[in-house]
Image (cartoon, rainbow, N blue to C red):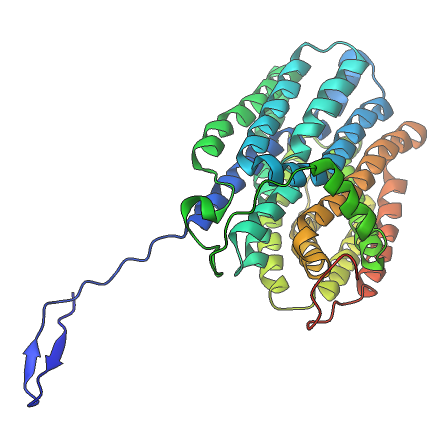
Length: 439
């Protein structure tokens, strides 16, 4: 405690009452960001399952890799196509309501799969219900929270929230792999359903739609009134797509992000475990490697957010895609029955790059499309998931036809080189001109 000393007019020192250092309260924006982080973890739990269940479902029901991959691709496609509409629905009904319904849909789809016996049920539960639910909590959700609650530190917050998916992978992949190996695939689906339901009370009690709801300015910004609910959410979402589609940067962002999805969710998340198992590796060991990717994904994504606040997002994207492509070209040579140092190096290297592309991609959407950036990013994310869906399906077909995943690894590596070039040719928005879709 400090004693404050003042002086009288004649220069004599007079002791004043000791001053207490004021405590700085944590801004509510960080609480909302924390709830968002936990929500994405709960919703992303299902993403740990597909790669683990391909072989058990193949053995149990006789469904081919391609058929199971088709169900996974439907989930991924709906995940992406739902995202832009979810961003608009959050403007209309509020973040909290939309996310609670989405978590409930994920839990219902995961739990219903416990009783499935037919392929169409896999399509319905995994594809439709889970796809719609996880899509409503996709990266457009993170973009909406970031845009509303933060002015400063947006890149960093984007990186942290993007890393939530990797955190879910880190938590649930080893757990679900152990459950599948020890108790079968059905208990794993129940675990995922419970993870989604547990998050619901936190969202309802702690999430707020806008800083004005609690009388605050966004972090690092000035106070703004909460806008009226935006009606015509679906119409607005489609209009934004048509407006954005008339601009060149949209197609470059969407195309490069489609390759991002193809080379991550569609490829590694879906097919790494069965591919490693083809080479004699135990499923639990392969799942643990995939979980380790999640560890370094968290580091890489947060660091990417920090870099995005300081450097040209286009050049960051080019570097990320180029490095990812090189690593995929080497992966077929690293597959072996046991884990060895070169495979560990690949896992670390690839993990750092996994979704490091998200903060610079979102920053470019914000720069190019201003207030509509969350919805535009939702459509860019849709392309990400369409790319993931295609490779989730085609990767399974390639495995059925050739008996190996090697062709898929090489093709994805070449695609990443294309994405690096696409990122470099995106035209920057002049700083003295406001971002607008009409430009």
